Each structure stands twice: as structure tokens, then as C-alpha cells.
Image (tube, rainbow, N blue to C red):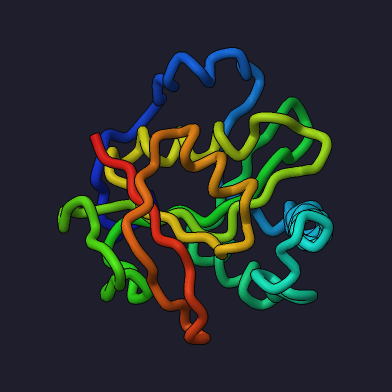
Length: 186
């Protein structure tokens, strides 16, 4: 955890759920400035994947921006999943209240306890299981995780269901667009 950031779980090595143990070579670490180009390539691939799978609007052509990614890295909230020497996935993880989750519509959160948030998760197109590995890691850090996704992001919705996340309702992002809100808690 970043200095001064709330912690909602234990620190140190994390035992992963049984369904993730087959991915023995993957590790999670904070993103460094040296990772920037690889991370931006993964995000570009993810935008193309979304477009090819009926979700052209969630990230459009330029999200996340270079400045946003640099801020995530310098803020210590960007993480990469490394498989051997290659970056297999990237995501933002932080604990504490998230403004976009302050109000939920057409449902309720599972609880109001301290939670972790995953944003901007994307994996390399040639690596299977990396996004699940990242989400399982985030859950082990906190035991209470929230995430959102676009209505057209069917692959992410399927992954969240597979990992036992519950669809809780709808939230509005900073630009006012709707997202399906999910939560998983112990």
C-alpha cells in the first residue's frame, strides 16, 4: 500500500484461491515509469479488443490518457501483473472511498465497509488468466472489492461472474456515463 493509504487487509505474500494456482509464474508489483510504454501498448490492445467485441464506447480511442496513466504510476496506485519478464496485465488498485461509487442506482452495495477499488484493468491479448489473477490479488488484499464496467463489456461481465462478483446496480462515471457496478466481499 502507498504510504498514508488505508489498508483493508493484510500485507505481504498472498495465498491465491485454488483456481489461480495454475498460474505460478505471475506476480503483481507496482508499475514503474520504465513500464510506461508496455502499459500503454496493453491499453491500446484492450481498446482494439473492446471494439472488436462490440464495446467501442467504454474507452473510445484514447482512454486512459497518457497523463492519467502517468498520474496512476506516480501516485503508487498502478500495478502490473508480470509473467516471467513480460507485463501480462495492468490495473489500478486503491483502498478507501471512490467518488464514483458514492451513489448507486437500481440497487445497493453489499456493504458499506472499507473497500478496495479496481479500475482500468487490461491484459495482454496473448496471455490467458491474467485479469483473473489481478482481480484475485486485489480481493486478497482487502476482502471487499468494488469494480465497474460498461454494459457492452460482456467479456468483463462474464469474468466478474466467474469470480463470484455480484452485480449491485448502476453507477455514473466522472463523465456521467452509466456503468454496471459489482462487488465481492468475504
